[in-house]
Amino acid sequence: MMFQNLVASSGAVLNVGTHIRQSPLGGWGMFYDASKTEPEWYLRVPKASTITADTILPELLRVIRSNPQLEPLIQRCVSAFGQRSEGQTLIALTAVLIILYRKNELDFQQEYIRVLLEDVNYVGLISCETDELMACYESVLAKDVVFGAACESLFSPEVHELSEFLISEGFETTLHDLQLAVAIVRSRSLEIPVEVDENSDDYLVDVSLVPILDFVNHANNPNCVFDVDRISGDVLLKPKPGSLTGHTGLVELSIQYDTPPYNLNRFGLNYGFFPLAMETPQGVRCEIFVENKVIDADVDVHGCVRNAALEAVEDPEVKANTYKEQLKITSKGTFLSEYLEMLISILTKKNTKK
Image (tube, rainbow, N blue to C red; front, side, top):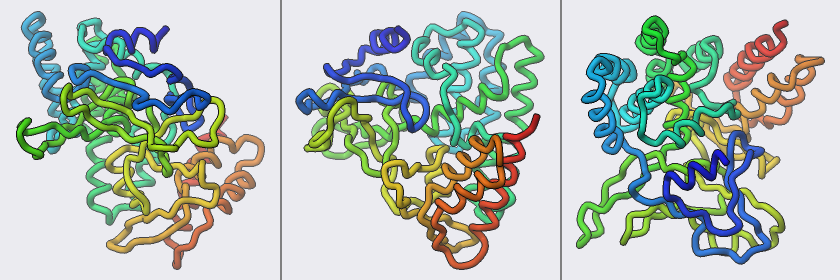
Protein backbone atom coordinates (compact mmCIF):
# COMPACT_ATOMS: atom_id res chain seq x y z
CA MET A 1 0.00 0.00 0.00
CA MET A 2 2.88 2.36 0.83
CA PHE A 3 4.27 2.18 -2.70
CA GLN A 4 0.82 2.15 -4.30
CA ASN A 5 0.15 5.53 -2.68
CA LEU A 6 3.54 6.86 -3.77
CA VAL A 7 3.07 5.71 -7.37
CA ALA A 8 -0.42 7.19 -7.46
CA SER A 9 0.62 10.53 -5.97
CA SER A 10 3.62 10.89 -8.29
CA GLY A 11 1.73 9.97 -11.44
CA ALA A 12 4.44 7.44 -12.28
CA VAL A 13 3.61 4.46 -14.49
CA LEU A 14 5.14 1.05 -13.76
CA ASN A 15 5.06 -1.36 -16.68
CA VAL A 16 3.29 -4.68 -16.09
CA GLY A 17 5.72 -7.05 -14.40
CA THR A 18 7.68 -4.31 -12.58
CA HIS A 19 7.74 -4.51 -8.77
CA ILE A 20 9.32 -2.66 -5.82
CA ARG A 21 10.54 -4.74 -2.89
CA GLN A 22 13.43 -5.19 -0.46
CA SER A 23 16.75 -5.60 -2.25
CA PRO A 24 19.73 -7.77 -1.27
CA LEU A 25 21.83 -4.70 -2.16
CA GLY A 26 20.25 -2.85 0.78
CA GLY A 27 17.03 -0.86 1.15
CA TRP A 28 14.44 -1.01 -1.60
CA GLY A 29 14.98 -2.11 -5.17
CA MET A 30 13.06 -2.44 -8.42
CA PHE A 31 12.50 -5.83 -10.06
CA TYR A 32 11.02 -7.15 -13.29
CA ASP A 33 9.41 -10.52 -14.06
CA ALA A 34 11.77 -11.96 -16.67
CA SER A 35 9.10 -14.38 -17.89
CA LYS A 36 7.42 -11.42 -19.57
CA THR A 37 8.50 -9.79 -22.83
CA GLU A 38 11.25 -7.18 -22.55
CA PRO A 39 9.36 -3.85 -22.56
CA GLU A 40 10.27 -0.56 -24.22
CA TRP A 41 10.51 0.91 -20.73
CA TYR A 42 10.01 -0.29 -17.15
CA LEU A 43 9.05 3.02 -15.59
CA ARG A 44 7.85 6.46 -16.67
CA VAL A 45 8.00 9.35 -14.18
CA PRO A 46 6.29 12.64 -15.17
CA LYS A 47 8.55 15.65 -15.41
CA ALA A 48 6.30 17.48 -12.92
CA SER A 49 7.13 14.89 -10.23
CA THR A 50 10.91 15.35 -10.33
CA ILE A 51 12.26 17.24 -7.33
CA THR A 52 14.89 19.96 -7.70
CA ALA A 53 15.83 23.08 -5.78
CA ASP A 54 13.62 25.03 -8.19
CA THR A 55 10.55 22.91 -7.39
CA ILE A 56 11.08 22.98 -3.61
CA LEU A 57 11.56 26.75 -3.24
CA PRO A 58 7.98 27.75 -4.25
CA GLU A 59 6.64 25.28 -1.66
CA LEU A 60 8.83 26.80 1.06
CA LEU A 61 7.64 30.29 0.13
CA ARG A 62 4.05 29.06 0.50
CA VAL A 63 4.88 27.65 3.95
CA ILE A 64 6.48 30.95 5.01
CA ARG A 65 3.47 32.95 3.83
CA SER A 66 1.11 30.81 5.89
CA ASN A 67 3.45 30.49 8.88
CA PRO A 68 5.99 33.39 8.96
CA GLN A 69 7.66 32.24 12.20
CA LEU A 70 9.15 29.31 10.28
CA GLU A 71 11.26 31.57 8.06
CA PRO A 72 14.24 31.91 10.48
CA LEU A 73 14.29 28.12 10.91
CA ILE A 74 14.36 27.54 7.15
CA GLN A 75 17.14 30.09 6.71
CA ARG A 76 19.16 28.54 9.53
CA CYS A 77 18.82 25.07 8.05
CA VAL A 78 19.96 26.18 4.60
CA SER A 79 22.98 28.02 6.03
CA ALA A 80 23.97 25.01 8.18
CA PHE A 81 24.51 22.83 5.13
CA GLY A 82 25.98 25.54 2.92
CA GLN A 83 25.17 26.25 -0.71
CA ARG A 84 28.47 25.70 -2.48
CA SER A 85 26.90 23.51 -5.14
CA GLU A 86 23.53 22.55 -6.59
CA GLY A 87 23.76 19.24 -4.77
CA GLN A 88 24.37 20.88 -1.39
CA THR A 89 21.46 23.24 -1.94
CA LEU A 90 19.20 20.27 -2.65
CA ILE A 91 20.49 18.57 0.52
CA ALA A 92 19.65 21.63 2.62
CA LEU A 93 16.18 21.98 1.11
CA THR A 94 15.48 18.27 1.57
CA ALA A 95 16.44 18.62 5.24
CA VAL A 96 13.89 21.44 5.49
CA LEU A 97 11.23 19.21 3.91
CA ILE A 98 11.93 16.51 6.51
CA ILE A 99 11.70 19.04 9.36
CA LEU A 100 8.40 20.40 8.03
CA TYR A 101 7.06 16.88 7.48
CA ARG A 102 7.85 15.95 11.10
CA LYS A 103 5.97 19.08 12.21
CA ASN A 104 2.95 18.39 9.93
CA GLU A 105 3.60 21.60 8.02
CA LEU A 106 4.18 19.98 4.63
CA ASP A 107 1.74 19.38 1.78
CA PHE A 108 4.49 18.84 -0.81
CA GLN A 109 5.57 15.28 -1.78
CA GLN A 110 4.27 13.84 1.50
CA GLU A 111 4.11 10.24 0.30
CA TYR A 112 7.64 10.44 -1.06
CA ILE A 113 9.10 11.89 2.15
CA ARG A 114 7.22 9.29 4.21
CA VAL A 115 8.69 6.43 2.19
CA LEU A 116 12.20 7.89 2.41
CA LEU A 117 11.95 8.04 6.20
CA GLU A 118 10.94 4.38 6.50
CA ASP A 119 13.33 2.25 8.51
CA VAL A 120 15.38 0.69 5.71
CA ASN A 121 18.99 -0.44 5.55
CA TYR A 122 21.27 2.55 5.02
CA VAL A 123 24.46 0.70 5.97
CA GLY A 124 27.26 1.94 3.77
CA LEU A 125 26.08 5.53 3.40
CA ILE A 126 28.76 7.90 4.64
CA SER A 127 26.11 10.27 5.95
CA CYS A 128 24.83 7.76 8.50
CA GLU A 129 28.16 6.61 9.88
CA THR A 130 29.02 7.23 13.51
CA ASP A 131 31.19 10.17 14.48
CA GLU A 132 33.80 7.64 15.61
CA LEU A 133 34.01 6.00 12.19
CA MET A 134 33.99 9.34 10.41
CA ALA A 135 36.95 10.38 12.56
CA CYS A 136 38.70 7.27 11.28
CA TYR A 137 37.94 8.16 7.67
CA GLU A 138 39.17 11.69 8.21
CA SER A 139 42.42 10.65 9.89
CA VAL A 140 43.23 8.03 7.26
CA LEU A 141 42.36 10.28 4.34
CA ALA A 142 43.52 13.51 5.96
CA LYS A 143 45.61 14.50 2.94
CA ASP A 144 42.64 14.08 0.58
CA VAL A 145 41.33 17.65 0.54
CA VAL A 146 38.14 16.89 -1.39
CA PHE A 147 37.13 13.98 0.82
CA GLY A 148 37.95 16.04 3.90
CA ALA A 149 35.66 18.82 2.69
CA ALA A 150 32.87 16.29 2.23
CA CYS A 151 33.30 15.00 5.78
CA GLU A 152 33.31 18.54 7.11
CA SER A 153 30.06 19.41 5.32
CA LEU A 154 28.31 16.29 6.67
CA PHE A 155 29.45 16.52 10.27
CA SER A 156 30.05 20.23 10.72
CA PRO A 157 29.36 21.89 14.09
CA GLU A 158 26.61 23.90 12.38
CA VAL A 159 24.63 20.73 11.62
CA HIS A 160 25.02 19.49 15.21
CA GLU A 161 23.96 22.91 16.51
CA LEU A 162 20.96 22.90 14.19
CA SER A 163 19.91 19.53 15.61
CA GLU A 164 20.17 20.82 19.18
CA PHE A 165 18.25 23.97 18.23
CA LEU A 166 15.43 21.94 16.66
CA ILE A 167 15.11 19.78 19.76
CA SER A 168 15.05 22.86 22.01
CA GLU A 169 12.27 24.34 19.87
CA GLY A 170 10.13 21.22 20.18
CA PHE A 171 10.74 19.82 16.68
CA GLU A 172 10.71 16.03 16.39
CA THR A 173 13.85 16.13 14.26
CA THR A 174 17.11 14.47 15.29
CA LEU A 175 20.69 14.68 14.07
CA HIS A 176 20.02 11.36 12.34
CA ASP A 177 17.20 13.00 10.36
CA LEU A 178 19.58 15.71 9.15
CA GLN A 179 22.23 13.17 8.23
CA LEU A 180 19.53 11.13 6.51
CA ALA A 181 18.68 14.14 4.34
CA VAL A 182 22.29 14.12 3.18
CA ALA A 183 22.16 10.38 2.54
CA ILE A 184 18.89 10.63 0.62
CA VAL A 185 20.12 13.26 -1.79
CA ARG A 186 23.64 11.96 -2.33
CA SER A 187 22.66 8.32 -2.82
CA ARG A 188 19.52 9.00 -4.88
CA SER A 189 20.07 12.18 -6.88
CA LEU A 190 20.46 11.87 -10.63
CA GLU A 191 21.76 14.34 -13.18
CA ILE A 192 18.79 14.83 -15.50
CA PRO A 193 19.49 16.55 -18.84
CA VAL A 194 17.17 19.47 -19.64
CA GLU A 195 16.99 21.02 -23.09
CA VAL A 196 18.04 24.67 -23.30
CA ASP A 197 15.98 25.19 -26.45
CA GLU A 198 13.70 22.80 -28.32
CA ASN A 199 15.40 23.84 -31.57
CA SER A 200 18.92 22.92 -30.44
CA ASP A 201 20.81 19.96 -29.06
CA ASP A 202 22.21 21.99 -26.15
CA TYR A 203 21.15 21.00 -22.67
CA LEU A 204 21.78 21.73 -19.01
CA VAL A 205 21.89 19.22 -16.16
CA ASP A 206 19.55 19.39 -13.15
CA VAL A 207 20.52 17.58 -9.95
CA SER A 208 17.19 15.91 -9.22
CA LEU A 209 15.40 13.43 -7.02
CA VAL A 210 13.15 11.25 -9.19
CA PRO A 211 10.49 9.43 -7.13
CA ILE A 212 10.26 5.68 -7.85
CA LEU A 213 13.26 5.72 -10.22
CA ASP A 214 15.56 6.39 -7.28
CA PHE A 215 14.76 2.96 -5.85
CA VAL A 216 16.82 1.48 -8.70
CA ASN A 217 20.20 0.47 -7.28
CA HIS A 218 23.70 0.87 -8.67
CA ALA A 219 25.40 -2.20 -10.15
CA ASN A 220 28.77 -2.70 -11.74
CA ASN A 221 27.12 -4.52 -14.66
CA PRO A 222 23.78 -2.68 -15.00
CA ASN A 223 20.85 -3.98 -17.02
CA CYS A 224 19.10 -0.60 -17.43
CA VAL A 225 19.67 3.01 -18.43
CA PHE A 226 17.58 6.08 -17.67
CA ASP A 227 16.58 8.50 -20.38
CA VAL A 228 14.42 11.59 -20.89
CA ASP A 229 11.48 11.73 -23.31
CA ARG A 230 12.36 14.74 -25.46
CA ILE A 231 8.69 15.52 -26.12
CA SER A 232 7.15 15.25 -22.63
CA GLY A 233 10.26 15.62 -20.46
CA ASP A 234 9.25 12.45 -18.58
CA VAL A 235 12.09 10.40 -17.10
CA LEU A 236 12.22 6.80 -18.36
CA LEU A 237 13.90 3.66 -17.08
CA LYS A 238 14.75 1.50 -20.10
CA PRO A 239 16.22 -1.99 -20.43
CA LYS A 240 19.56 -2.59 -22.05
CA PRO A 241 18.67 -4.69 -25.12
CA GLY A 242 18.88 -8.40 -24.37
CA SER A 243 19.57 -7.88 -20.67
CA LEU A 244 16.80 -10.31 -19.66
CA THR A 245 18.00 -13.11 -21.93
CA GLY A 246 18.61 -16.30 -19.97
CA HIS A 247 16.93 -14.99 -16.81
CA THR A 248 13.85 -16.40 -15.10
CA GLY A 249 11.75 -15.09 -12.24
CA LEU A 250 12.26 -11.65 -10.75
CA VAL A 251 15.40 -9.83 -11.89
CA GLU A 252 16.62 -6.76 -10.01
CA LEU A 253 16.88 -3.71 -12.26
CA SER A 254 20.02 -1.61 -11.94
CA ILE A 255 21.78 1.41 -13.39
CA GLN A 256 25.41 2.50 -13.20
CA TYR A 257 26.25 5.68 -11.29
CA ASP A 258 29.84 5.73 -12.50
CA THR A 259 32.11 3.62 -14.70
CA PRO A 260 34.97 1.36 -13.53
CA PRO A 261 37.70 1.61 -12.49
CA TYR A 262 36.04 3.43 -9.62
CA ASN A 263 37.90 6.06 -7.69
CA LEU A 264 36.44 5.19 -4.30
CA ASN A 265 37.04 8.64 -2.84
CA ARG A 266 35.28 10.37 -5.72
CA PHE A 267 32.49 7.79 -5.81
CA GLY A 268 31.91 8.07 -2.07
CA LEU A 269 32.04 11.85 -2.23
CA ASN A 270 29.50 12.09 -5.06
CA TYR A 271 27.04 9.40 -3.97
CA GLY A 272 27.62 8.79 -0.26
CA PHE A 273 28.20 5.05 -0.59
CA PHE A 274 30.78 2.68 -2.01
CA PRO A 275 30.10 0.22 -4.86
CA LEU A 276 29.51 -3.39 -3.92
CA ALA A 277 30.81 -6.30 -5.96
CA MET A 278 28.06 -8.84 -5.32
CA GLU A 279 27.72 -9.97 -8.92
CA THR A 280 31.48 -10.30 -9.42
CA PRO A 281 32.93 -12.40 -6.56
CA GLN A 282 36.48 -11.89 -7.84
CA GLY A 283 36.18 -8.21 -6.97
CA VAL A 284 35.84 -5.03 -8.98
CA ARG A 285 38.87 -3.04 -10.03
CA CYS A 286 38.87 0.16 -7.99
CA GLU A 287 41.18 3.02 -7.19
CA ILE A 288 41.75 4.61 -3.80
CA PHE A 289 43.27 8.06 -4.12
CA VAL A 290 45.58 8.99 -1.25
CA GLU A 291 48.27 11.66 -0.98
CA ASN A 292 48.25 12.26 -4.75
CA LYS A 293 48.84 8.57 -5.46
CA VAL A 294 46.43 5.96 -6.80
CA ILE A 295 46.38 2.65 -4.95
CA ASP A 296 44.73 -0.21 -6.85
CA ALA A 297 42.80 -2.99 -5.18
CA ASP A 298 40.35 -5.70 -6.19
CA VAL A 299 37.75 -4.57 -3.75
CA ASP A 300 34.46 -4.33 -2.28
CA VAL A 301 36.63 -2.78 0.46
CA HIS A 302 34.07 -1.05 2.60
CA GLY A 303 31.41 -3.69 1.99
CA CYS A 304 33.72 -6.45 3.20
CA VAL A 305 34.88 -4.47 6.21
CA ARG A 306 31.32 -3.60 7.21
CA ASN A 307 30.18 -7.19 6.77
CA ALA A 308 33.03 -8.28 9.00
CA ALA A 309 31.83 -5.91 11.70
CA LEU A 310 28.10 -6.45 11.32
CA GLU A 311 28.43 -10.24 11.41
CA ALA A 312 31.15 -10.35 14.07
CA VAL A 313 29.11 -11.81 16.92
CA GLU A 314 30.74 -14.99 18.24
CA ASP A 315 34.34 -14.45 17.19
CA PRO A 316 34.91 -10.92 15.86
CA GLU A 317 38.64 -11.38 15.23
CA VAL A 318 38.27 -14.56 13.15
CA LYS A 319 35.31 -13.16 11.22
CA ALA A 320 37.13 -9.91 10.47
CA ASN A 321 40.21 -11.75 9.23
CA THR A 322 38.02 -13.95 7.01
CA TYR A 323 36.54 -10.94 5.27
CA LYS A 324 39.91 -9.26 5.08
CA GLU A 325 41.23 -12.23 3.08
CA GLN A 326 38.40 -11.74 0.58
CA LEU A 327 39.67 -8.27 -0.28
CA LYS A 328 42.47 -9.66 -2.48
CA ILE A 329 44.67 -6.63 -1.88
CA THR A 330 47.03 -6.05 -4.79
CA SER A 331 48.54 -2.72 -3.78
CA LYS A 332 52.22 -2.38 -2.96
CA GLY A 333 53.02 -0.91 0.42
CA THR A 334 51.19 -0.94 3.73
CA PHE A 335 48.75 1.95 3.56
CA LEU A 336 45.67 0.01 2.47
CA SER A 337 46.30 -2.74 5.02
CA GLU A 338 46.64 -0.18 7.82
CA TYR A 339 43.45 1.51 6.66
CA LEU A 340 41.51 -1.77 6.79
CA GLU A 341 42.98 -2.69 10.18
CA MET A 342 41.75 0.60 11.60
CA LEU A 343 38.27 0.22 10.12
CA ILE A 344 37.96 -3.39 11.28
CA SER A 345 39.13 -2.46 14.78
CA ILE A 346 36.58 0.34 15.15
CA LEU A 347 33.70 -1.59 13.62
CA THR A 348 34.22 -4.83 15.53
CA LYS A 349 34.48 -2.96 18.82
CA LYS A 350 31.32 -1.01 18.02
CA ASN A 351 29.35 -4.15 17.17
CA THR A 352 30.44 -6.25 20.14
CA LYS A 353 29.63 -3.73 22.87
CA LYS A 354 27.25 -5.14 25.47
